Image (cartoon, rainbow, N blue to C red):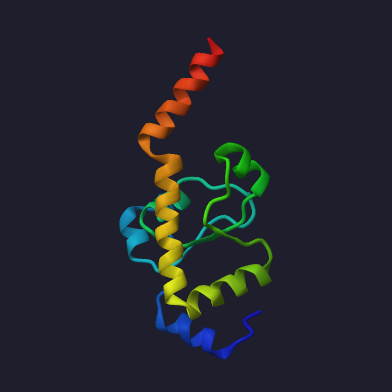
Length: 131
């Protein structure tokens, strides 16, 4: 599937690690790019952790679900097929400024939608509506 020889060199130059178990901020800060779920179409704790550490994320998510929940889609490179994953990795590898910009936008988005205050308010609204 790898179509360009230079990408192999880029992969060899950098360490690629599979993180088993809970991802920590240390893991995220050590990474340039985070790849998360490509099958489940949703995220758990890895994506928000990576986004809060200003790391670009590649994953697959269903845009209609996320937009309904948050009112907008996140600055995540939504990648489903092998071609999507490959082309998005190439885009991030070739353009460090884009990688850093996407990371900054990720942090801004996650703080706007997932900060402790925002999540507490949303839960309080749900509880109040159910009473």
